[in-house]
Length: 223
Length: 214
Image (cartoon, rainbow over all chains, first blue to last red; front, side):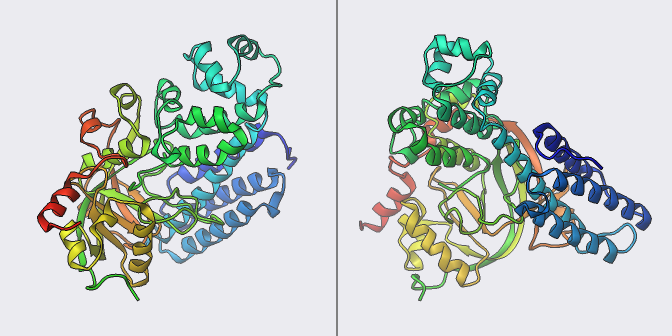
């Protein structure tokens, strides 16, 4: 099978295909289970072949490792059963790796400042040019030019960082909330707001603390 | 040698607990195959050093953790959040019962561990793990009167529509049954009830006044 190794849309589709296979309910009868696993295995192979480093990719190795565990669990289980939960656990573990690959692809795509700017505009569709200018660190005129598709040559690191932080925020709040998030004083930043950190320290220094802060939104922590 | 004078009581039991999570992620924290654990630091673990499941025994306790972590101090911000609140049925053993300031004190531990800086709390968590505890109950720093249940290590969710107590868990060390409660944001009442890191904790102060020492 011919595989394009570098095109992100192809990779993203392959990630989605593996996720779709994992979401399909495992049938009961042994022969149908084998067919189910073969389809999953094919989808994983297609994804791994499409990765830039192929089978050398760290997560590709983990996907193979966990899918071997899944196959063994399926072989060991009686018809229609999963008595020790090993099949379900292996499916969730493969899913963890596949989602991680998907997130990595998303972030890699946003390393392109033009793509990052488009992502920011799409994620904050109702934000005014004033708010976008504050977040991106450019004038409202430049915001207009970028919205019109002009090349993103200024503040590229900040645009990329902003887009990547928004990938963490968007599933926890409205677009308005994401704009407000940058103006909220944070104990983790010694009382500064994320925007103040960006403005005062610059994107290189702000990358780690801002990303950590946004990633903390994944799930409840005891603070 | 552990820092406690008396070993914390080891509880075995069943707890209904709550956890709020981004809609993009599963209810519990697992990330199989990661080279370095990616979970953000919390009171009872440091990022890069394993995983912990942070739960609250009260729904408001779960929301208060969000309010405190995010520094949400006004209604407009609170109303912008969209989180999934999950009910998690925890059947566990070897849970350290440090659920009150009195219990911390009775073990010879500083009750401020539950509400103060994270570094000494993480050191205590390391000692608990080393002593074979699977988690701990502790007062919530975010909401006086609420109790947090933290489990050490990853857990995987079994998402059910209901009947959590009836589900026959095939691997209790790995799975916890969960059910979606709501997709919402924190109640605005918590804007005043939540204790932020720059505030006193009434529960701790009350204990302190009773004990008469500082």
